[in-house]
Image 1: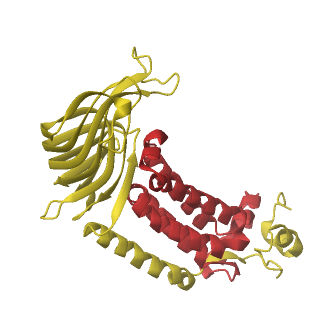
Image 2: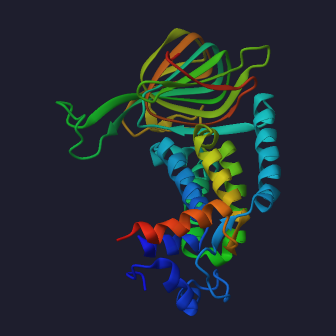
Length: 130
Length: 230
């Protein structure tokens, strides 16, 4: 648990997770057979490309947080694009997840002073352990 | 250090261990017990405000019918209704959709489902209603309720049920599906098909089994959850 908390504290965890989940949700809403999508042409393929990019950006934010600004800017643009290409952004749900996640990742900074409430909780955690 | 029982003091005692491993995301400053990454609201707002504005702009433009959106849905029961459909370049043919091997829905069908593929190159619809059953609740999309009509290009649907009052111009019935030329889609060889220059269907109702993929312009778009489908 301690290892996970430390890992989480060193990256925009919720931002990356929400962005990746948004991409996955959009992909789930469009399992159309690829044969027909190919009939529609390159535009139809963009419907798959954008949520896959969201998924990749979200995972990269988690595993390569040093580049989080670039990934989050890409993520927010791609998330907004899914409104046009992918079932209204996975019927709005995936788009909201993606935009929220990108904003969280963009606003995240490492090594911040703890909030008063946080330090109080932190102080209690070691004491609670046996 | 991860197994150390006292997280707070061990983090302070070994400043370089986590900083070096995280590939530069964690600064070289020694990590004191309470210091960790955090979202700064003002920084997040720098992106959130324009992103919200763009999202709102996209939705408004879509609702005015200025921007087209794409749909590609399947695997869910999916109903489309419209009071009127006018189309140019219509083709229709039968096709077999193959289920995944060993699918529980197979029954005695051998895993194949007969569907009707309808392809319309350019279609305008009035009072479009589209509902997806999400189990318990329906996601309802309506558009084109006002004077502006919904328009779609390269509309392709695989449906099991199609009802309505239809009228065709220059219809050819009984073509081989691989020779269709009036619409954008072509079927497999040796399959019955029909095609027409124009099509008009009143009180259209479609249950789509597998697929729709098209560019839609949806003036007067409304997206909501509802107990009842279309």
